[in-house]
Length: 286
Image (cartoon, one colour):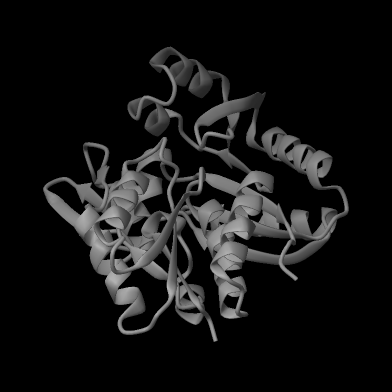
């Protein structure tokens, strides 16, 4: 019987069926489209979001959950059961979500046992960690073992992003306007990654998506070689490209498991449609 209940937020972009199977709690962020507000992955999902995005004059905005949202989620997670709670969230460099969870932790410290972790990741790069930790919890691992596993995976995972348009990163302040205009004119595709602090940075710049994808594959081979890995393919509205990556990864790596996931409305608001991401992490759980 599991003694640890795992919670994350909606930016982990975990497919609903997998989240339900592993009993992973989720606290939604909000996405604002025009004068309407939605709860990410509660009353708006990727397909509808990307359709609406094409019809908007202004870019969408997002907002984090409140500490009270987390307090309610923590209490709901354990109900009358005596379980530890492990709460793993979106990189604190992107959002105040992690800080809200930490504040909620302090608000319930007299009644609940809660550990909060900054994933230093985004989208299903978080989800890949959360899923594996939830499996460990379901197998009966202790809170200390689950926390150790989470930190190991966060440290050893590699994730790379390709964006189709630099407009969203530029509007969000991730790159300068001149770089965005020049990149678009020259068909330059920055290969983006996350550093140890969970901050987005351009790892390399190549001309054309095919060359960018080849470079990512090369970087992943240097890191993981032939060791067993878990893989995630993250797409927006570009499933065809995701299919190509599944084939490439299965051909080039020792894939223990590969999971497809859609980049959800909140993360999609900041990277835009056409974004593709690949995440790999070593197989650690026994």
